[in-house]
Length: 87
Ligand SMILES: [Zn+2]
Image (cartoon, rainbow, N blue to C red; front, side, top):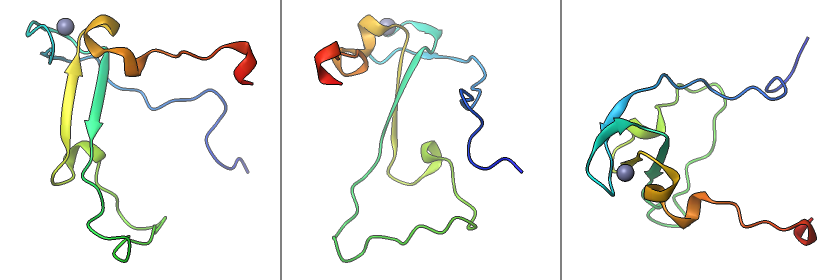
């Protein structure tokens, strides 16, 4: 029995078109950022339940989804700045 995520397998997202957050053009979304609200208090952190039905993070209340058409529009936080010395 295989456990965990099969190697190198990422969730497949169907290509879809949205208005780019930066340039305003309606293009195929290449980068998406979801901004999730912080937990209100450190004493109210919900316990993670593996078997519970989870909403998609884009459907959570308070979540803001930003769409970007390209890495230039998405901004610096989407670019890896690692160097070999970091490892
Ligand atoms: Zn753009």
